[in-house]
Amino acid sequence: MSASLTTRRTLAAVLAVGALIGAAAVPAAADDHRHGHHGAHSALVIGDVENAGRGHDNRALNSEWVEVKNTGRHSVNLRGYTLTDQQGNRYRFRDFRLDGRSSVKVHTGNGRDTHRDVYQDRRRQIWDERDTATLRDNRGNVLDSQSWGRRGHHHHG
Image (cartoon, rainbow, N blue to C red; front, side, top):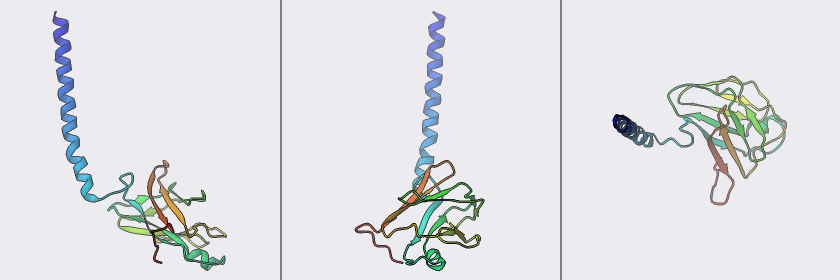
């Protein structure tokens, strides 16, 4: 007789805990919407894309870039983060700290990496007139992607 009593009491305690957790989760979720994050709750997004460069010299390659923006307040180390195009070309960030509220341009050609510009060191363009840039974190989660050149999406350089 006493066994069934303790079982019932345990069940009541479990239910009470479940209700508490559920209540605590609501304000946090509502709070998220105000900040307008998209993607995997990431402060990192793809900003502008410039794929206007024509030609294969280094200057043309470097006039082609994709901007990665940190919209959050805290700096993020982008080591292992990747930027890919639709064809599967992939750029992997080296040890690179992107400050909060700042951005870095990932150029296609060769150059010396600074805190504002990094270079893929490629010999040819990878961003086509119609393409999609996808930013992933070091675990492979998609943080943001940007498409251009489709019908109805005009990219103003």
